[in-house]
Each structure stands twice: as structure tokens, then as C-alpha cells.
Image 1 (cartoon, rainbow, N blue to C red):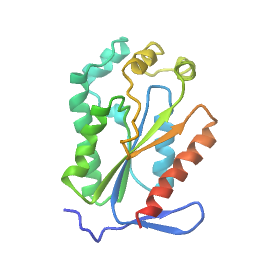
Image 2: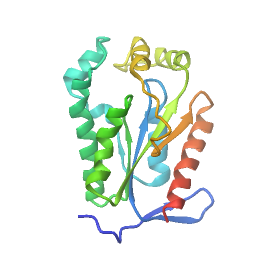
Image 3: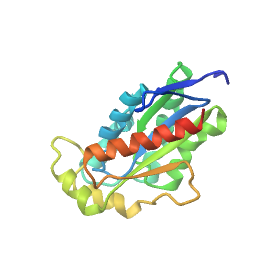
Length: 200
């Protein structure tokens, strides 16, 4: 059981130590090709938090469907989303002050599955870092990837079901990934650090 005495310590870019009164789950989300893994790995290293690669929690059946160009259904995703939520909480319950997770979370109801983690533990805050760029930008990026099961054809299918976060989803940060990678990483980290400072 987590104690309310837990404090998250983060070294900000300004060299000052920021503290947080909560444990934080940071979900880096968005369609294929938006750079979820790259941004999540960067944030995990900068925040000194464990990183959970969402793709590794897909069942083999899901991977085969995507490799074959067949979009996943809602039913395909429920167990996957629950597994990511449970793994995030396991990391925190083992003593991690927070965790960074990649998860496409294309629909609001998918995001709501992860939000349940905070419902059961008031000391946990869930955040979504939504990486967004036009479909043509992401299609070009995916077409250049080698050895990944997600084909370029899948990008459009993800945009077809994408539900962009609405204003009432106050736990979402939106980051424009059509810019350079360094700009994207800097923007994402700055927004995360601002939230952590507010949670002192």
C-alpha cells in the first residue's frame, strides 16, 4: 500500500529539485509513427522513472493481426489496456515514484480504462501525453521504418478511429510532433515538469 508520505523527486532542467505529492503514470499516446517510443524513453531517462513499452504487452494474436494489416478491434484491446494499467501499478507498488508508458490510446474509452488506476488509488495521478501530427507526416515516417509489424497502411486505419482528446479531458497534454525531435522532446519534458512543480 502506498503511503501519503511518498514524495516524487525530479531534477528539473533548471537544476532545482522539484517534489511531487503524488505518484504519476505518464502515458505517451498517439497514432503509429508519432514517436511514442522515442519520446517515452527520453522522458523516462530525464525523470528517472521506469519505462513500459506498450507494444510488448500485446498478445501474439494481436501482433499477427497488425502485421497482416488487420486493424485491432475494441475487443482485441481490452485485455491489453488492462495489462498496461496493472503493470503501471505494479511498478509503483514496488516503490517506483512514477512510470512512463507507451500506449496508442486512440479512443476516449481506451484512455478511461487506464484512468481506473487513479480511481482505486487516490495517491496516483494519470496523465496522457498526446503526440499529434497530420496523417501524411506520420505515414511518411512509418513507411521508412524497417522490421516493425506496424505497416504504413495501418496509419490511416488508426486515424479513422482516432478520437482526439477533448477539453474536458484535463489530464491530457498535447504535443505537436511535426517539429524536430529535439523540439518535441524539450516541449514534452517542459510540460511534464510544469505539472510536477504544481504538485509540490
